[in-house]
Image (cartoon, rainbow, N blue to C red; front, top):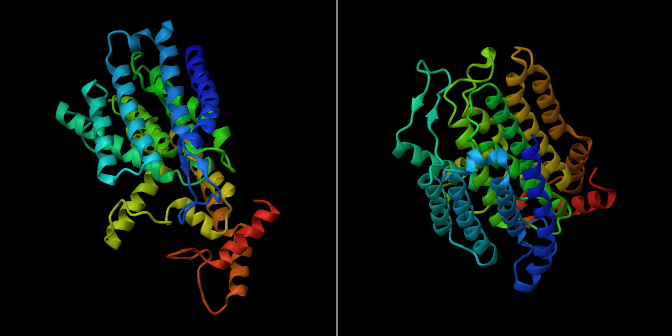
Length: 404
């Protein structure tokens, strides 16, 4: 663990310090996120946090390449170079979009190029196990492996981009998910199911490091945003870990009780919050016959705020959901007991009830009905121009009293 701690610590420290530099530089080059109809911040905020995260990635990879523990990953393998090139492309596309808006097709093209670079340098899936299937696993052909790699990168890059709507949300989810993926990879390695040359655990710990280094700057109220450059970079790195850990383990590993947890399913479960948000967004736009690039305020964090939760509490709830999903994936690998998921299920039920019946939520609903009994509007329902006056007023009262 010593080498992983050094690499993760390097990523955290460099990201933390570099983000201070980006906070100073962003206003001077016009890289500022301006308040708008879909934003929850009221003042212009620097949006170059992704640059600090990218520098953290570069420093961590450099340190890792110098440690004897990781020589098997770096010597004689093209994967580290492929990851850095793909990260550079993803960061560049996002950074341009943060300063000057990039069209959705151009952004997708950049994501495809990034995923293609991974594939060209050998960062692809090898196996695919289907839960409940009679056959054990599928050995992927090179063409299919490349296609699935690109699709995985595009999905997770957009998932992290969509979930990055509140201060600290994407960074916190990435930190929790990265830690869970690292622990899962460690369990596979100790069971002899993951090779020591697999770069997935190293990428996972770098995700933890850059997320931890950036989070102090980004918690509410955020002093800087990661922007598309940061969120898509995190999505790429989480995709790399998913591909190299879950997609290169042919054997089932979750304990005999949970045989249906195929190795590739576990990373997807850990990343359930951003993936579910993306899936709902896709279905919502499909039903409404809208372009997928059409922005709206129907994401999970928007819905929590409309229920009456403040920004901080909404973020905390989604962090907890990520932690519960990660625990549901990891606990069977440690216990192999049939009743091990019962406490997690109870925790999920308690969190669901808390989300809908928190005293502040009930009070917000009641106050909305009293303020406008004829409108019969849902709490926080918004017009095309933005939030209703009732919600703005209630939100200002809540902020005055504290987020609770």
